[in-house]
Amino acid sequence: MGEIYALSCALVWAFAVVFFRRSGETMPPLALNLFRVGISSALFMVTLLAGGQGLWHRAPLGDYLLLIGSGVIAIALSDTLFHAALNRVGAGINAVVDTLYSPLTALGAFAFLGERLDGWQVAGMLLVISSVVVATRMAPPAGTSRRTLVSGVLLGVASMVALAAGVVMAKPVLADADVVWATSMRQLGALAVLAPAALFLPGRRERLRALRPGAGWKYAIPGTILGSYVALMLWIAGMKYTAVGKAAVLNQTSTIYTLVLASLLLGEKFTRRTALAAALALAGVVLVLRPWAVSASAG
Image 1 (tube, rainbow, N blue to C red):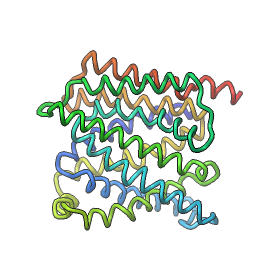
Image 2 (cartoon, rainbow, N blue to C red):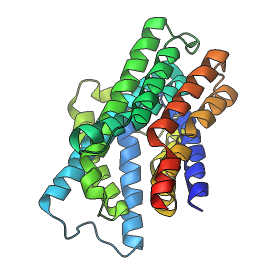
Image 3 (tube, rainbow, N blue to C red):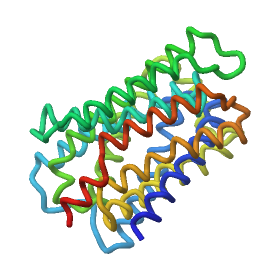
Image 4 (cartoon, one colour):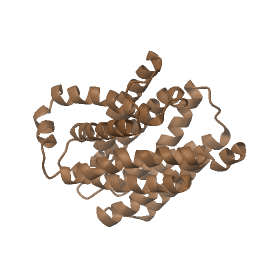
């Protein structure tokens, strides 16, 4: 059953990315991220209450600080960069760049948590990096310059660095904490930073105007519900009911779904170079996560 959850997570996330791409046409990245985090925070709070839990758990102050800090880095910063990259390079190229998450997380766990890093994982990292290099040579969306393409890829890379850093930061807490509670704390930590940033950073009027009910909401609302709540709940279920490595690889099939949906629904080109980048990325992720090794150790 866990495999079905993981594959469903990948498909739901791919549809969410398409919605985010459309909503990004009228909503600036910071405004869209604040919109996402505000709605998803409310949804997770309702989920906590429905499950008979409260927001405050008996946990050390350090756990709260790590989760909040993780939310600031991996949600407030990373997702804002993600939307900026998505607006520049489109859903397809961004999906390839997003595969950096797995090798960067493994590298961070090796550097800061003392986890083992072997030759297979290094080879996988090199494959994923090569896929990103190929992505910079892919055809950008219509009207996008080569300079914008490269800057978008770099923003996407920065987004994945921040995401991996935030996950590695929270990992010691996530090992023992209730995942829905921990996710709620991370969302609230991000919201505490995004709200004042949206109000006081330059461009406030444009952001506030985008947050009013308008055309962008018809894409932002379903994208938020699918990507920031449903996909995350499916991700949790997949990790719970099957081997972590297997679930992570199945989650990464979102790259294929996103490329296909970007071609069908957004009119983005699917070329041989696109297929090569996706193949290199997915092969690299499989080597980094090696689900067969996880299954063998679990057995």
